[in-house]
Amino acid sequence: QVQLVESGGGLVQPGGSLTLSCAASGSSFSINAMGWYRQAPGKQRELVAIVSSGGSTKYLDSVKDRFTISRYNAKNTVYLQMDSLKPEDTARYYCKAALSVVAGTWDDYWGQGTQVTVSS
Image (cartoon, rainbow, N blue to C red; front, side, top):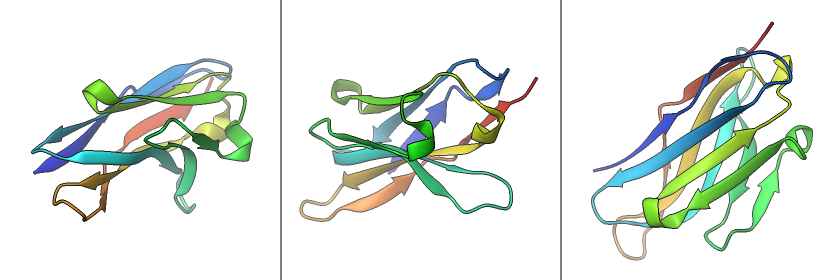
């Protein structure tokens, strides 16, 4: 059984910073891309940032130059450093990873989400 566990959310004032972490654990697996998504009330879930197994990254336009995604492969962990946070960044943030538990088969796994609230 593989699971993704996120941590690091919370309440922060506008202009502040938070770092989210997501660790994959469980039975033997391989990891391809890892990413962060978010969903605000009444809105669709959107991709915030993604990092490939080779380290290539892609960001939502509205978070470019403020957020940084990184991964530490030795610990099967992906991070999202969020700086200069704005109220519109308020959402539940979800980690997603493309994992291979059975050789040749890839599936998407999701974490349970962590709440980020930006408010004064």
